[in-house]
Length: 509
Image (cartoon, rainbow, N blue to C red; front, side, top):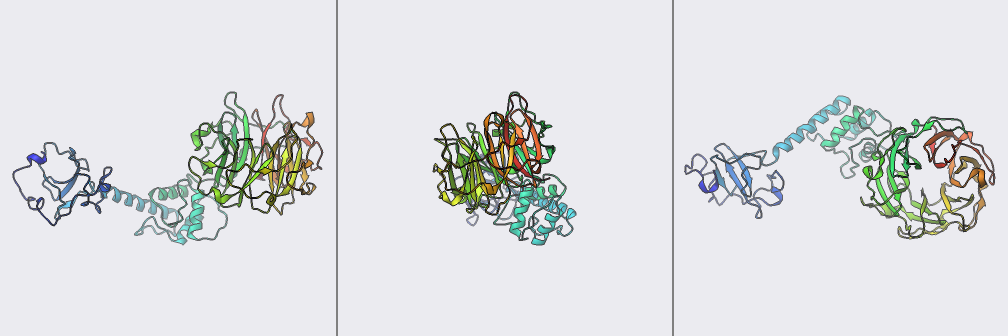
């Protein structure tokens, strides 16, 4: 039955649904009628959308929008008698589903259930509260202690506790405005984490990138420790004719910052890189990370957040260096923002610094230069940088290392053919920026060009991967410590036509 032929029998509700009642509210606003629910707080203010109040002979009224053939809650009006009014009746109860109340009540009930489940895991959490998603500081601390993982020691404020939970649990955000308040999905995530599901590991992981743009994350423990000079028993499976391009190590609980061939920087959570074993060829970068199809990852950095360090350093193959304050990267869009001008050269390395460190730039031919980082003035994201090392016409920069002011370890130098050495950092005397530097390691036919130099200590391990998918993990203490301008020793024995693709330094497991 429609409005035009409503029943002639006014019945019990004729006065209640009278359209002439001047005290009733007007029609609801357009904002209140979007989707399939109507907010009862805003019903009665709309002039843009046609809302009718329908009654089917009960003590409940329903809502209908824009002369639809059914009510907002889904009741069909075909072949049914009803009364209709453009004004909300005062003496009838609203249909909860039409007003969206039933779904809110259902969400609230779920929140109560999730809280009760959390209380079963953590005795000090009250099982019922007026606001089931809100926890006291002591309750947050108890939840953190009950999780099947460990945390660094932080001051136990609600903000710091929330930060740690967001880093350790998939699905919990780092809410700074309301750190003690958790929504339904976050309560569910807390409950799952207490049961051991979706907890982000603290164990360092390695990321392997390939020429075809494939990526995978593997725990460092997947690499077996071997003696120096072996072939590497850690066989890394590759997709078809693909080859390994680079390897990085990081903390999965940190934020990851990737710089691409377009000079863009992107930010995402470390756990978002899919986990894969060494037998897994990985997946396409664009399938898991928010970078553009025409871009490829050049470098990866991790940090608790973008403001943790003072400066982002970028180095290019033409020997230029740029130092940019991390405050310029606070609002990284999902489509990335510019981090380096690569119109005249290519990116070869990146790093974080505190503004008081020394920098070491090394070239493929084995030259290196060490200078204070404040010799390179801070620059904007769009700048090209300043000259860091003077290059021969046939040489190019390949590595940038950041040496903290208190670093007293060694410099690991690694060449393309698997040879390398450790050299005490004191042998690299400080010079002025943009000099020719000193000889770091002899290259030649046996060693091949330098792949990288990295600061290292004897308490760390070195993971090396080759283009054809061999991997070796060697204690740094097994790599000989010798002076500059020497050839070094064999670290990994390579198959014919194979070369070193990359190296990363990890803490001793």
